[in-house]
Length: 261
Image 1 (spheres, rainbow, N blue to C red):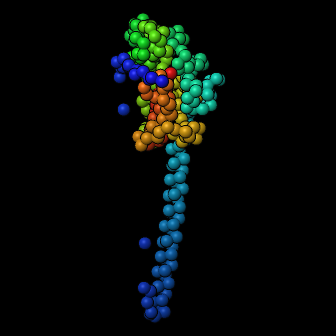
Image 2: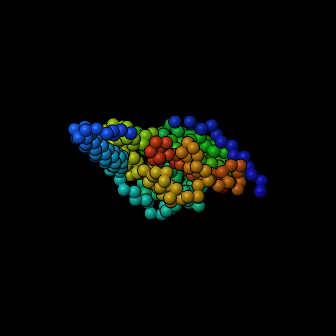
């Protein structure tokens, strides 16, 4: 099958003892007793330090996750975190599918696109072309971006183009060296975002959780990206899921889901 080259429109765009007198022996015995006491005290202190470190690690984990909301996926989303057969997300409880829903569908349902970008929805898009990115700021830390494609044989408006890419990213993830107020703000923003946006996975996803759910990754990079991709049957290139995780905590930072026929 002959594949087409997809033409993308301009897009907007981080451890001697010796012989001697009984007196000397007595002193030696005393010294040994002192040494033994010192060693025992040191071991006890070490155990205490270890317990303190373990407790600190536990407290740190608690600080990072204690106030996060429990994940409850929208009914109808896949149990597979990277389902290549059902590339979806939900906004305010309604599910949208890549390759099926149009820009107009998302606009009609109130996804908060930048107003100046919505001025372009009536523009014509040539066949095999994509639109520029449309941005929706969910809150101060969480943003979504969307791209749409014309897979028809004629020119159509941007509003009529099919959803072919959805990206969600957060500016920050909780860190042990952040002040409590900063972590609280991050968590509040993640909780707020999860009140509106839902994928088949939580926004508090870790790299280990993803691989436990779906171990068939196409690629796992040294820069903490995990990819699940398949080749397009029509166009040159591949599409699917690309996850990015924080290099220190392995916590979710971004997902990019793409679709090509």
